[in-house]
Length: 165
Image (tube, rainbow, N blue to C red):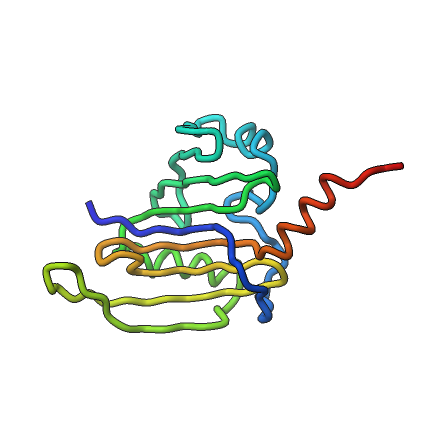
């Protein structure tokens, strides 16, 4: 089965282009949200380890697998996988929510057997976050990645560790 992916994760560099929307959620999931809050909202999620959980849902009407990755600042990565044939449908939903992407690239990728596939990458950037939609994160997979920057994660950690004395 060919799979596309939507990833929400960490981005090491600060971002500078703002997206149209200030709603930094996908399907009600917010970056830096606590693991308990995310799992309370998605009790169907299965956790293979302390920092990694998965569940199935739809995005833009497309059946997807959601993978959640947590650290001490909360949710830092959301990886959503779906069929590459649904890439246009999923990215249309993202454009509807976040506006036009900051970048839009087209190209080709090649697998280990020499077969070539069309590729398409959208990138949205906002203050402290980045969203990437990749039709071919691998030759037969697409992905969307939603990231927080290191600076944003440090700010979230500071808020959680702030003393009230």
